[in-house]
Image (cartoon, rainbow, N blue to C red):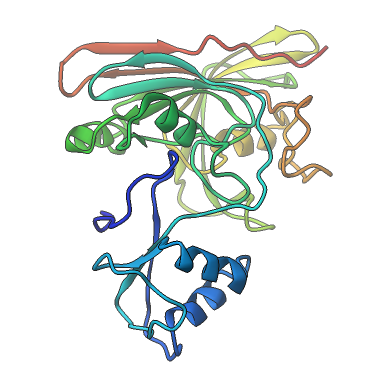
Amino acid sequence: MTSPPAPLPVRDGVGPSYVLLPAGAWPCALAFLIERFPAIDERAWRSRMARGLVLDDAGLRVAPDTPYRAGATLWYYRELESEPEIPFGAELLYRDEHLLIADKPHFLPVLPSGRFVQQTLLVRLKKQLGLAELSPLHRIDRGTAGLVAFSAQAATRGAYQRLFATRSVDKRYEALAPLVDGLAFPFTRRTRLVAGEPFFRMREAAGEANSETVFESATPHGGHALYRLRPVTGKKHQLRVHLAALGAPIVNDSFYPQLTDDPAGSDFSKPLQLLAKELAFTDPLSGRRHVFTSGRRLSSGD
């Protein structure tokens, strides 16, 4: 789905968010916003409106008494009163006019969400490089380290997005996990992944497979094994679930096979031992073959 044109510019590395107003009987836009976003109190919305940070789809300022209009779009900036600092930085591996490849540390989110806005890879790169149109072409979990590809300009973004949509990008990951006896490599795991409990977890279920991972090898690594994995599909938490289902949960995984006492991953001394190690594809614009490799290494702390 293509986003409508934004009437607000990128501010401090952060682009505006928007919400479509559904049919309803709210007396004013403010009443809808308070109900729609219960984590943001009325005081915060009034402050944003007073500073001209909430606009309608015509670019007009929205006031607390602006009547509710179903079908309209409201634009606003996400703001956090406080945000945890992520004391780790990303490495820029490649940049040209259209494409950027970053090597992300553990714990740094790719996109603004939840508790993080400024402390995200996208916002840091926008501010560092001055690229207002920068946008990730895929995502990896906050806890996962490694490679993330970005489109640098909207005009050519579609060509790179099609690479990922058609599975024309070879992705390889590494993970540290217990060695399971009796596995014959390489082998492929195909299962159906569905939403689990709580809502942010996934689980395997009966039915037609919608996820596929190629397990290429596993070699001894300290008291664990270093697994080399190639995800054919890109389902949420796919590699974490597939390894846990084999009896080899990834070292420091706070979600699988069970939730730990630190599901938010706030203990920086225990990074999830999962790394997006390699991206390889043929550039749709230049025809050049790209192979990018993360310089990061996994360590179980043994």
